[in-house]
Image (cartoon, rainbow, N blue to C red; front, top):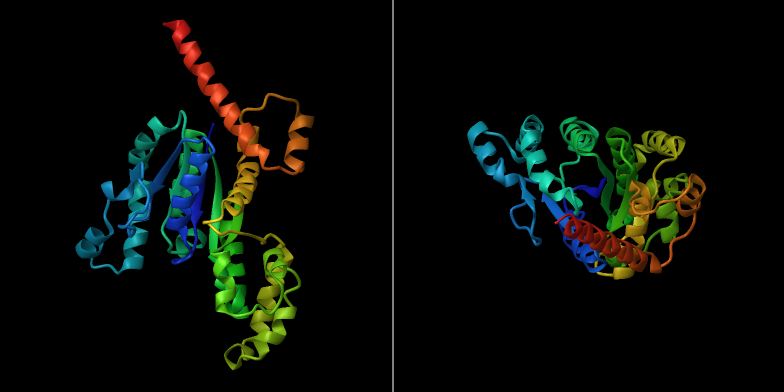
Length: 303
């Protein structure tokens, strides 16, 4: 089994910075990481990518050849990738033995709650290559400072969760900058836990632009609360403890914590339900090193 993350979110939410920081962190704790850039509009990569979609198709070429804008061209590129999924599979196969995968997707949100191309690409890779992936949906934390934008972010998160049907973690990124946008109406836990949204109604009524949509907003809040699926983790990508706490959640969601454990169903349940301390990473690093040494020894014995 191969584990990894599907990194998505609106433009400016920090996906590329996340992939860069996460790959560095995972490398430090002993994992071999491969970053796969599937955003044809991302031509300034801060990380070294193992696979780049620009080797298959370029956004500028699509825009020029088909007279499309950037949004239409991105949808075209995803459709082209789906039809040429064999190209991506062939590039991934050499990485499957010992790499942890980070997929950096475009920031066009309709690709993940409306169109089927990106979902089809992910599902084909999961089935054909036996991948265990978690969707990491990044949302800029500054949206919490505006009740209307926060509710929009909740709707986007919910729609994406339902559409992709993957293990899913919503993340408030750039949490270290949240106070620079002004004081929050409630404490941070209110926004991460997505508590009673009726409390936001009063603040929305103070804005004349939002007041006339009061009934619509109220019904949308009811939809979010009825599903009761959305909550958020927080992330400061420059803080190793913040990144580490997120990695713990991701490893539980995609099953990475069970990958090197040979035990009973009861023990698996205990691990899944129990808290993880910081030694978790040291333990995983030791397990991974032991497995690598065992594989090397086995090869030497055969020779």
